[in-house]
Length: 118
Length: 111
Image 1 (tube, chains in turn purple, blue):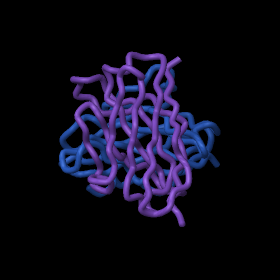
Image 2 (tube, chains in turn orange, green):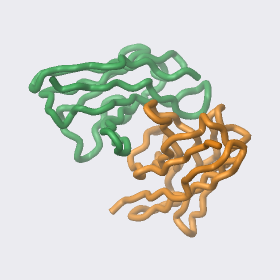
Image 3 (tube, rainbow over the protein chains, first blue to last red):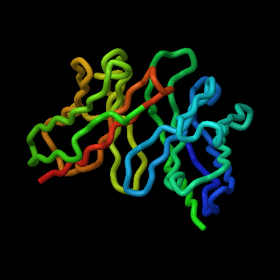
Image 4 (cartoon, rainbow over the protein chains, first blue to last red):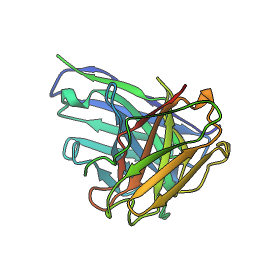
């Protein structure tokens, strides 16, 4: 079964750091682009970052770092300088195969909650 | 990069057809055929329903169809069913701010 499972969420104070992880199974991890998408409470979806090459939304650029470990089928998001507006559910999502011109996310994890509050 | 514009809500009776619009610009929908649609039930992860404007992933009902004209993409749900009640989001590749932009989201209510 193709699956993505996020971990590492929790409560952190403003200005703090958190590292999210996403473990993949059921597919050849290293041939796909991977993404982080977040959703603030009661709000819509917001794309955060992608990795084949690395790309970031303006709202997180310079604070968040996306990385992957193909040997461990894992994706990470290092979040520094966290703000209240970073609060929400963070989803790991599989994107297109490397080298493809397609841009969509066909497999999603269940999400992990990040709360930034004092 | 501003979010793509969707109506906040759309409703219909069982068996009817509804259409959700998604309006962007020439930097996204107007130029690229990388439009996708996602269904999200409360408390659940999004699910891909349509990709590359018109394509359905395996397992998605044929009642869901997509189209595009100019800067506007559309998702049509025919033969509306109670299980279709959910939030729907469009998304597109964008050349302005890499890589994706999502729509504002539409709540579909089955009357």
